[in-house]
Image (tube, rainbow, N blue to C red; front, top):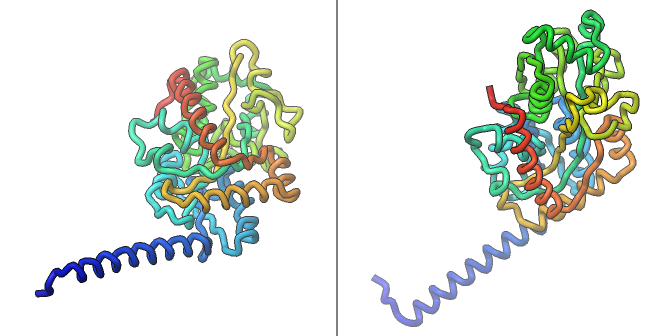
Length: 338
């Protein structure tokens, strides 16, 4: 058995210190060379919806700026909770990111009894990517058949025919779902809620005539509105959208019954909580540059999205504010997961 002499103890201590130093140096070197491989952006909804559109708008720009491919990975289900949980439990090495939403980081904590992740403790917010109004749309053919040309027309029909209209959403707890629930509670109407695994599959059924109404994020509905397949009755923001200047707000169109109605959406990039601050900072800088570039900015504005790019600290404060706001909205609307 080796003799535990003072000299041996000193050598052991020196070896341990050297190992720690080399390990720290290795980690620092790895971080300084980030990214050294492709980076995954998890979208917690199906392809084709607004969350997906925004992720795919910034992914190529980040790839060009950072010299590695940024891959969009759609992991839909449970109102965004499946994808968010995947990222929350991923390594904090800068190679797995989340395109979070007002649902995953503002609404779901108040709506679900238990979340598999903590939207505050499990994430390092990077930056707001965009904010968008929702838009109240109907299948255009169905609207003509029922003689619905405005929000008051819709309210009159829905009140006279409770349960005859079905309301599509991108999933339980999303801003699309909650915008509809708030409308129902303020107008005293009843529509059957039909949750999907994302906006895109819901829109397919909307365009196909299988669904009647949806409070969709504007960017994903815009192409169908322009094609005349969906009829835009109102936008859910506090003011009109520059992308649809002739479409009134829900409050404006609904009068006293809908005074104070507002339910906009936002989307932002987040990393697992243990992600190094220097990686978070670099990502924030590059996303902000991408959103400020003429090509990306014009593309988002044309679809009704307002580009973000705020600091990580400002995004943290925004998420905290959104938690408080939507907890009150969920309570007032009486919304709950089916």
